[in-house]
Image 1 (cartoon, rainbow, N blue to C red):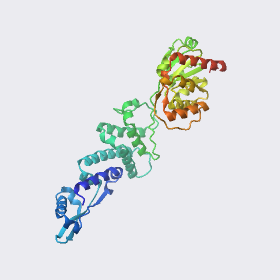
Image 2: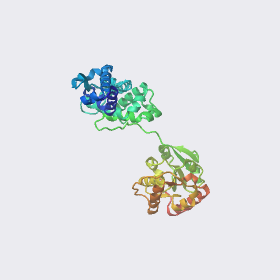
Image 3: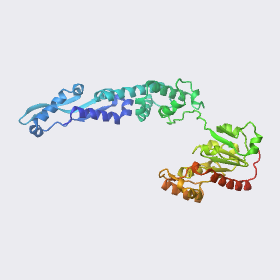
Length: 403
């Protein structure tokens, strides 16, 4: 025997499973639940429970309006009118019958979906029926249902308007702050980007979520370690912070570039002949290595001695043909065992730009999670190793030809 509360729970579960379908086509929603009335033998064995169950369905309010009743003849108990099945259709009605929480969710998500469909219909690049757009929007909203449900209405409205504007201006190349929508700023888009991308993708035939915005600039520490290079450019400080475009504009011509992952370490490096040091940005090295004078010079790369550090080293060699690692080897690791820590075991990926010794170390560090952060290496030791490696490079690398 299924009681009314069990049916309400089934309705709530049906809404959770079929949210996108119900929003896309409310009239197509339907739920049918068998109520499993007792047999005559069961009713005779416990008539009180049987009658309590029947009374529960008679007094359950709106839910009772969708119950199918049938006459059953129970031996020694006579003919009884019993509920046998609950069934109803239309998503809005089903959600209201499921309880206040489900009704409220339905109202919020449906409202957002209808606003999005109306705003995006004129912008859609998809050459198909509006029902397909509604279905894709419903799917996009369902994928982020928790965020849509928690979002203040002002932010939900901005998500829809932002998606419409971005669809109307593909490839604008604007910075986020340049988008002429009140409330649109970098932090807002960071928090709501997945929601906006979902709506944009729903409106495009190919599902592309590209927003066409210019990414926020990445800044790098630049330290000119070579005294003659500083003398040539009296307006350029020894230490500064620049984006890749500004780095390129310095038109430096070092004989060697040190790329160092830790900002603090870059800043404390001493003067070194023919050398410029630049702070890295983790895995995102493509823009840095596209700077012409960095691309022309040999690179000494110094990062953490761990699985991620060696992955980044491999990535660096994808973007630059002459990258040599420094202070990321077995000897350095062994010399600083007491300063190592654990970053947790990492899954291994195929790396194609490591030396045999680096690849062997990568496999070990991935399996053990061992890591030696570069800032833990004593500066005097590090500078000694840098000088030795730098001397080798300077003796084997001719001065660069000026562009």
